[in-house]
Image (cartoon, rainbow, N blue to C red):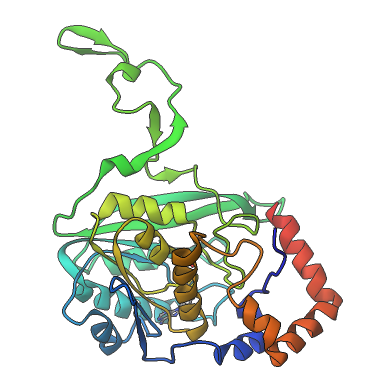
Length: 339
Ligand SMILES: C[S@@+](CC[C@H](N)C(=O)[O-])C[C@H]1O[C@@H](n2cnc3c(N)ncnc32)[C@H](O)[C@@H]1O
């Protein structure tokens, strides 16, 4: 396994600054896919004119948004201000989606702070032209917490629809075999047991997803430098359930580009943005790498390996950090916690 990790960019401002010159997009710019399928913008999700520039006259069938959750990794906002900001990108999404479409939003609930912002977000959504359909929980393998509280292992995903979009139930079937027998019912006068009646020998994911491995550095799809990467399998499940091949999928908070890559792999188009040029660049590189090599990420390498080997400024930054004990300790701790 290649060992060329990159530290988290949100906690390493000097490295982030050093990478900016290697990014193709400046704020306001859009990268057009040479294959004509996707668009990646360095744009602001809450800015109406940015989203109009992205969409032109196109409409999405599905949006999968994963905004910052108003928690520690981001500059903190008051929850009222955070919800007012969410309302802006929700309104932009409403305009960008087709009449029959689906919206999924990953959102956190801070257990130490009144569980904000999830309930506040849900209430705000009641006045929007979306119908609530499900509250999905994805279970993480690792969690955070102390021995004085339940370990926090959940990620919440809200599912809304506008009009009457498709829902492909086949997307729900997991690889987990059905083992529970029982639930007898008469069908055409014959007593049948539930396994005889089922469409599949595996269970449905339902709205509690326990079968998705969260991303860590031993997985091929890992994108070092990113701190909030969603597993491809979760994106694939949503895309399969709520879109058809050829449909346009939107993601206004692309970060590592997981929605984009899943859309590429599943024959959908994707328009995705990040306000941060480095993440927009990472998403472009991830797509290009997949097309060139079939690989879904960098595992324990990183998207800027070439620059970090050739650019003297970056080499010095990395060397300085490597010689600092805290950096090595931190890296070891992170890797150990992921095992
Ligand atoms: C939680 S991460 C998304 C993770 C993503 N789903 C993935 O799998 O990699 C949120 C991203 O939103 C970006 N972001 C924050 N505010 C934004 C805004 N106003 N417009 C666009 N992107 C924004 C951040 O730079 C960050 O990369």
